[in-house]
Every structure is written in structure tokens, then in C-alpha cells.
Length: 120
Image 1: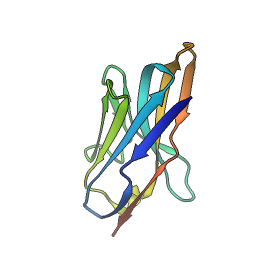
Image 2: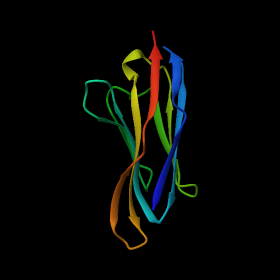
Image 3: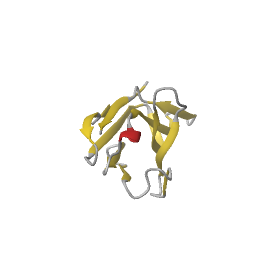
Image 4: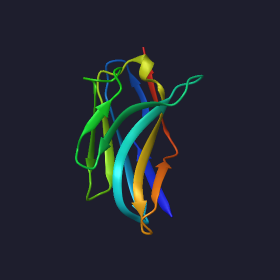
């Protein structure tokens, strides 16, 4: 059993900041990638940012320069610092973790999502 605990969503005015956290726990042997995706109403889920175990990061063009993804391997936690938020960032943000479980089976796991709303 694996759990992903997401925190940090909420309502913020345009230009403001939020920090999302996602802590993984349970039967995890090794985490490969950790990332954040988002889904706005009526749109498909899209990649926001991802970070692999070595620290390499990848961002959607729409958030480059405004969002920063980081991870704490010891805590099995990924963070998303979101600055200069704009109304178009409004969406449900989902944590995603790709890992090897205790049986060395690769698993791709999603959090339950946290709402981020940016008002104009």
C-alpha cells in the first residue's frame, strides 16, 4: 500500500505564490521520478514539472521561470513552488510518483489532487 499526501493548494490572487507538497509513504523501494500535473475544467491533464532521481528537471513552457520543482529524497517528498501565479494556472494539481515497490515492480501512482485557484 502506497499513500501520497498532497498539501498546499488554495485560493490566491494573481501575482501571488503557493507551495505544493507531496509526501510518499508505504511500500516503496526506490523512487524514480516525481512530478506534478494539472487539469483545468474541460481540459486534459497536462505535465507541469517533473524531477528525476538525479535531480534533472523538466517544465512545461507555460510555467518556466515561474515554478520550481524540488525533492527531498530522504523524506520521499516533492515540492512545487509556484510564483507569479496567473488565472490560467487555475486547475486541480496532481502529484505523480514513479517507483519500484518492495517486490521491485515499477508502479506509477497518482495523488488525489489539490485545487489551486488564482483570482484576477
